[in-house]
Length: 248
Length: 251
Image 1 (tube, rainbow over the protein chains, first blue to last red):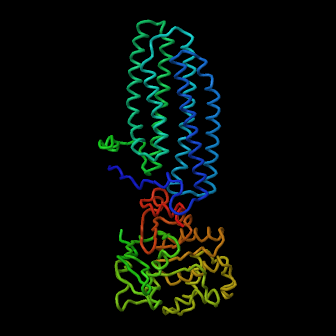
Image 2 (cartoon, rainbow over the protein chains, first blue to last red):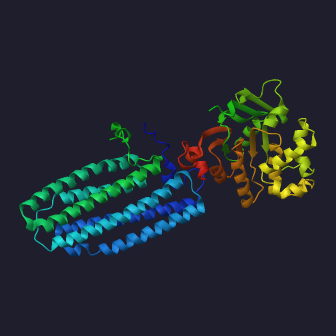
Image 3 (cartoon, rainbow over the protein chains, first blue to last red):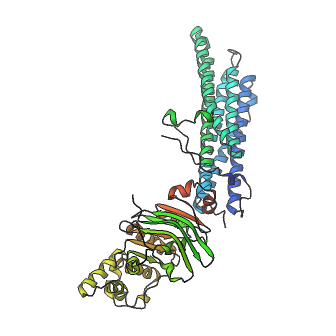
């Protein structure tokens, strides 16, 4: 089955005063965008701080995380309410409708990213209280990539950049490879010495959380592509439906 | 699927004004097709072309073809009365004749030669059943049509069409004069009628077009800009101008 060609790039969306009229509705949509950006910034900060805690083995560095999580949760609720109101009162269609639906979905992914950052913090606490198992190289690398993916997906949203969104989706493979690498390495530690198991497991869980963060960033990127092009790129059924080679 | 109604490169001029610009559209049978667009885009003009109502305007000049079941309705010698029986029209303001309900409905059949009382009675009942007016009006068929509510009058106009067994119903903003509840009733009626008739509706109410139609055409300044499945037009239109219009960014 052929992939449908992209429909119009809704460039309107990214201009503040499109065509003839600034609708009151445009201000609402702009507010919605800003809230999402804010939410993304909070989520990224949480990832940052939790990895910094992990690498420096210092629990105090992650103290702001619970407060940030509260803010994230508050924003999620606010955005959901805003979405509901806009749907009920404006009967949006086409790009406006896709934006509003994308906002509802992205909002959920961002909140989950925050939850995962909190989970990482909990595992990092465990590690900070014990002797270091090994210098951390791959996990920070993985975390950095995941963070870039989150940033990339939100930038793609802000700029209407389909290529950027697609590169985020493709980065997910690299994150999965790193996770597998980390698992294999930690497995060898655990097999060699059972006293390492608790710490190794904590690290494996952290790697798993980071992988999930990357998955959520991928979801956001897929939503951005749908928003811009009206093309649903999730769950390609056959290899033929994946982005063609020329787009990689 | 052979289109029921079609225009092929239709150009229409009112004097020097180029009202329809090479419009090619195919209307499928037994479904509701909506035509939307800003005021002055030519949608009503296009609608009126389908039963040659534009012939009544002396300055009109037409190029291109209009086909009903594949046959050109503009051929010299075409039977206009028969065309307008097959392709009926409903207008924005209901226009019942200043006659009784019964006489309104039997007017058309009588023009087409029916005269037996029993036959006319049956036609009246069937036509009013078709628009769900029968139960309400069966006991006052000889009351004046002008005494009915606006919604009832619009239903009566549709009944009047049904009486001559049309194939196509052209509706030009049929709910504009109605309140939202009456509009909802007429829309329900349209859905029921679409099982039997081909319906083309011109509307400036986009939500209505989105609600009732299977396919939608968007017109702008005399051109048909985009035509396709309604859900596509309202979720992922292909043309930027269509998107500007349906999202309300265009005037």
